[in-house]
Length: 157
Length: 90
Image (cartoon, each protein chain N blue to C red):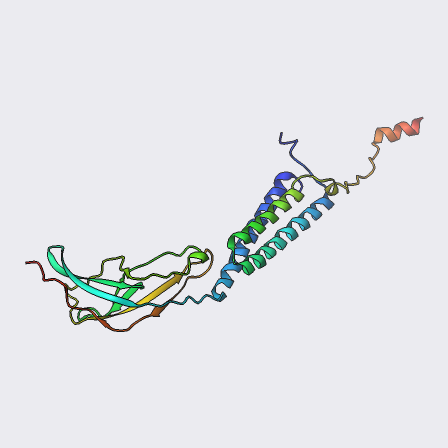
């Protein structure tokens, strides 16, 4: 504390300690902040088309919706989850999303070539990522058990 | 250059400087936390905190006159043996 160098050292070292204290306090209160996103998912229309996929024909589903994830069971696999659409919300102003007749952003096809006899549940999942603090997530289930319709075209020979 | 920037302060000044920067930084951290929590802005919290650090650096780093108002009082210089002998001879 006698000279400039010693005082500068003490001030900035103490500031660093308090910075981490401040970050710890913020991280500690983040999980208690009220944050309850609400969402609604509607499946408007669904089509299945057969396309050539890696040498074999495979059914691809096209969903018109306001959704985010699909979850279904098949004979071979108990839980199948496919992300159909996602979006990153960066600010409070952009947090209110209304999407109509939205088509799936990512390919929707099963490990097996066909969807016949399967049904799926559609839901919207969210993850809250604070700058400092713990992650929070949740989901809204929409309509349970929607059957896949018959393909619109014949498999290519 | 290094000598010119030594910026030394006295012992009482060191005590004052330490008390000052610790209270300013802690107070601004607390205000920043409360304001940032109320307005839900992490950036605002850290802007207030950075302001506190800058203010305490400004108040503590230069050798302001109130850090040098209690200079060390040295004892009287003791006379050496030759001087005492000279006094007795005269």
